Length: 142
Image (tube, rainbow, N blue to C red):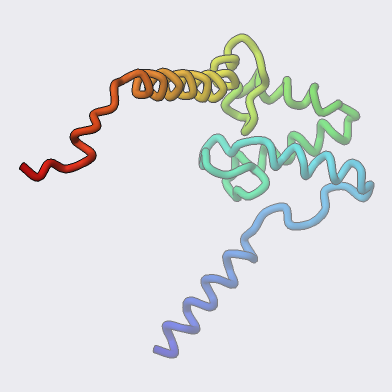
């Protein structure tokens, strides 16, 4: 049992040691903040449920390095996002941009809430117009 505990402790300790990019990418706090924000908003294309900030896959490491390079070259955030979308598609972004292709994604929740509200209104209005059956509520004692 003691060996099992030591082995599990070692595995857990190694996982944090294997983390990629634990240090600061930039000395300038403003550039570091931009870098952190960008890598948090880009999806790991291999993992698909993690940002590239949290992923230790080679592709995520490569994208972090590419974003770091573009920030160092003076590219703006929209230019970096455009590069990623051009190369990997809108799927690379956690929050897809509002465009003609993604308009249905942005509008669907609002349309569904409106549709549900309209259906609820119609059902309630229809139920209110039905006659009340008084005999059913009194319970007959014949």
